[in-house]
Image (cartoon, rainbow, N blue to C red):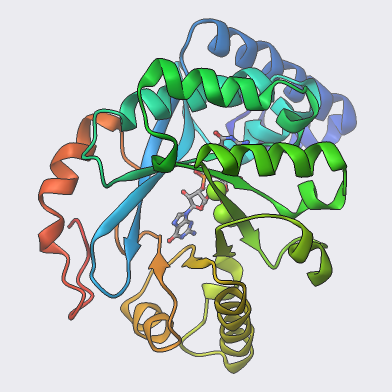
Length: 286
Ligand code: C2E
Ligand code: MG
Ligand code: MG
Ligand code: MG
């Protein structure tokens, strides 16, 4: 980020592409060190059942505590990780940690892990998941894997076969950021999945904007027609919750309930979840 650069914003933009490339290289080098030094950590954000107010699971979101720059956002380094292929190592360690952590949680609580399309291309994803479940002791049914519509664009029979094999294990497949990709509705028919996550851009302004409401309503009815669970991402207000509940959306995830938290806080978060009332929509955690 320009504003974090000691040379200042001006020189950053003056130097143009060179500086940008340099910043990328710096991120790449440091990310490689972070992976090798096992410095990356999953933080966990609750998925909340909108009718009962109970936590059904947590999404694992990668966090990079950087010695000088504080917590670096995945928005900043996931693209670099994907360009350099480091995403396979990042994805592998996230899967391992998430399954190991979740195996210690109550046995009705799931964990969701994000997968990059690149992880499907290296060819060992299925055995990685099988091995990780075995080593962690986490039952397959407690693991959810989040994929994006870009994966469907590949229309590859290998991707399809891998998704079917994962589901045959009992793992659940979620379609992340739904509505932001370019997949046509007909792809949805040929790809096996269990959950649609409505992208947060549609959830924003839901209470005030009739267009957003119409889009969310149709995604929910599409999901119901397909028999899948529907989760709304980026839920920030009580107005959004009541709107989503009225439309019959099953689950919500967002800052209203909780931000992503380190594993050390998850068990106590689960114990205090009664503090969040489905009736009032009060925040899960103050
Ligand atoms: P995502 O999978 O769609 O994750 C949801 C993102 O929305 C997270 O951002 C989360 O912190 C943020 N979020 C949750 N609730 C709210 C809310 O109420 N308001 C707002 N404004 N934002 C909210 P985060 O952690 O920065 O992650 C960004 C993206 O980076 C993720 O989007 C995902 O695509 C990617 N990512 C994160 N961890 C991994 C990973 O382990 N592997 C891969 N391949 N990608 C990851
Ligand atoms: Mg996700
Ligand atoms: Mg998402
Ligand atoms: Mg998103």
